[in-house]
Length: 362
Image (tube, rainbow, N blue to C red):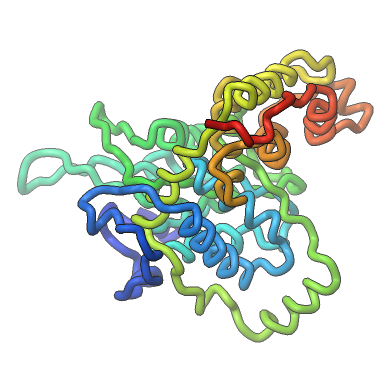
């Protein structure tokens, strides 16, 4: 394995992540999955408190971007994957690293380069002379959180190594299937401006990312605070976990139980279906996008302290979840229309269901 890959094998903790102590006490009235012998559900109060701790931890590194951090948390709780797409120097990799280090679990980082091979990502079977057979050596994808830096610098052949693990949470090598440990999340970064030496992400790959965020430049106040706090010290060096794998898995179970009424479910389907009927869009959102939109809306509702989804939750996550999946026509590009503009227009055009505020959600 080349030096550009830093991997954590299943069941092992990387040195920078191991703390040797519990990150924080379990909330009152709840029992951890480890004590129960299984992963249970957390209360909404515990979910809100844990999310607040993680967000505050990440904000120590990424100053002045609470909405970006919230989408990252929504993606984590929705059992999805995050694509961070922006210009250099705005904190794409810092966001991915800070979120990974805030959770005490196995973390790996892959620096995607043109010479990276699929086996460098998934692992490879090596012949053992002593046993006379092949042994599988897992790659860096065998971790709870996989940080893929500059994913579009690798060839489509290497990018395709992530397709199975992102969708099915498993890896198949030499006819053998290896399951990945839960939770599993890929956080990938890419620079959309610099095109030299890069490969555009295939549509199948983009569709597997639950959400895409663009961090953008900070305002002057946030940039001044960053200069004061970060100029002489790297905050990532002292970042300690504030949650662990079992706790995050329990939060995910809580999000799964968030109620969505038939009216709101139908509204979600109508929003995605509308992307396939707009003349400006050559390729609309897929049924996978509908599932990811619903899961993200449930996570957004839970982070807002509600046990049910309202249309506003769908509106909040619609652009991050849908925009990157659509392919615009040449005419739309010529008119300087973006996928974000189209999604926002759809949100204004599709009627919101009446009586879906959640008051009678049971």
